[in-house]
Image (cartoon, rainbow, N blue to C red; front, top):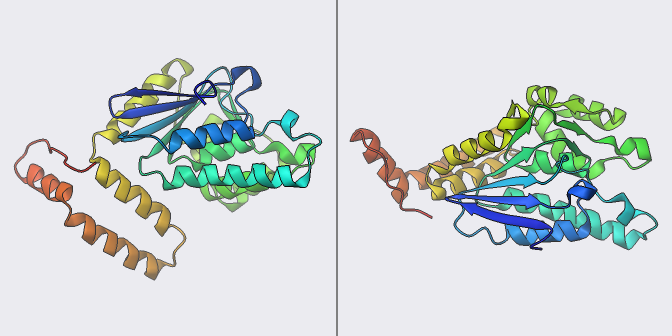
Amino acid sequence: MDDLVRADTEGPVLTLTLNRPDRRNPLSLEMIEALRARLADTGDAAVVILASTGPAFCAGHDLREMSGRDGDFYEELFAACGRLMMDIHALGAPVVARVQGVATAAGCQLVAACDLAVASADATFATPGVRIGLFCTTPMVEVARAVGRKRAMEMLLTGDPITAEVAAGWGLVNRVVPPEELVEATAALALRIASASPAVLRIGKRAFHANLDLPVADAYDHAAAVMAANAADDDAQEGFAAFLEKRDPTWRGR
């Protein structure tokens, strides 16, 4: 795990780095489990950056590993990949993808599963499985929720890559920066998020994911209940007081 996924902490930000640059950081079963183990042990990190080494962010599943296997292996692989994406959703800390080069198939899925994404201007995104006879059905789950039905279908049916600028316009990434500014820009965004109460970040992220697919009336009921509980929380009361007293808040929640 130490070799496959590196973990580096700087202040309130934990960076998890996929570390198989020679293979374009594929989501092999071993890589998936190593990343899941890291996500299960983020400690007190307020924000997690998901990064990778080398010229590519993630080229998807490892086709060498997949070639010639039986149905049981494929079921295990895709189920594990789905569990990884759900781990990202369930994690209390927001997860920010830092994307350079290509993010294809399950790699594109990984970007879409993250809460936010910062992309280098040279990054590209694709769900090209249709071109090799394997429709990107599991990547579709995250990508369609990020970019919408028509855009997702275009990516899935053609397999053609989109640029970082198009990905930003479609909602797959939040911002695009020059390659030399990628690390600094992602760190700045993470630190900006981390300046808020970690407890409130957890409340907000979990409410966001729980709320999205509810009917509107149910969504309001859910959101109102979460917000009422949040308002009574110590950090909300501290935030109110700090605003009224024109001072910086001192967060208590972890």
